[in-house]
Length: 564
Image (cartoon, rainbow, N blue to C red; front, side):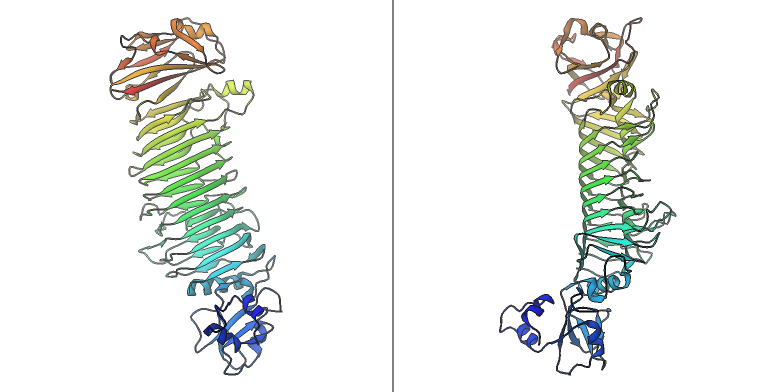
């Protein structure tokens, strides 16, 4: 008979000794293995059977089986020797219940059976061993909900086949499910040529493409596949399967992963509202495309995302409205002469970045002026961006290397056929950055009370009228000088419509920190101690003709202004 200990091991606990469950357990039979159940003819009165293992007792495959009148629509049942049908009754399933061994053995069929039963009956699959291997993808059909696939301490699922996903949701209308605690890897590193090597791949099986919604993927690690989580992409831009109301939380993209970690793209054919990405870290060394792609989405939120190593764009937001990024960080990400870390594109795009920081940016080329088209955030194709908070950390480079870097021209905001607004920008630590650059009809605005920082490299720099855009007042000016002596600084002139309006030599304030100087408001030649600017005014910062400039010098010129 079934002991209390055996009942607990099988996942069944009677609420009280007199309950109906307890009464049923008293009539249960106990067998050594599931295989023995298939060889045994059980009495007709036996309605419940407990097995201590699948192939042998103690192998982790022990389960509880309930007699049913007909075969269920899933594969989670066993027939005894007389043909009686017993359906697996455990609330939590394990691959071992269906014959999985773990380790290097191909457990694809056993895992598929466990997942199919869980999806069909709204149950949970627990991956309890450190690692499972599978030769083939695990397929999950449409129109299923309330199931979960959970690993123990980042259980590794190793895909033995190239160009093959681990989980494939091939239908649509799946919802209220969870995948968590898993580490996805392939037997060997996958490349962009392996376009089906996803951790979780989605694909709609009908032209309408209702997609998948209201689910969570969390606490997962991506090691060496092509993509992590997203829609099928056969390079023909055909998928229509939307993802909406989904949460991707605590995702880590590790070394050798060659494509996007989160790829939410329908090629503009259907919308993807209300998705969330929280606490993402990407090690982007091998990535051939942005680590995160958010397309055709609205009311999307990204919170605390970081990108380390790699090159160029790591976040692409395309035709996505009301996207909010709360904290985004780049460390040691390489920037090419025409690259940008964040690209916002499309006339429907409305992106707000609340907090952007960069640490140890690497420039791909040492040639001076090679980075005139580079930016941290690129606004293009009629997109709209609000950058509300920016900080750059000091460059980790020797002084000579830093002097070379500071002659480059990298914009924090690179605006091309779009609209950008900058706000709450902290003082820049390195004059390699200019706050904003506009071209091809782009527009730039600044919020009241913000700093406008510009790099001066020894000739003159102009402040386009659109940089003011409306009536405003300069209330303070600050200079940051590196490789430049004080005599050169005193010769600087701030010109408005060709006329000097700032006498630096008379008002050069004390050093603040290191090579930073404050030029007080009283130095401005304005009766009310505030320089009033009109939208049509043209500002320039220049040295008198013939003035000597130290080789390798760099000056960051910053003005603080308010509107009205």
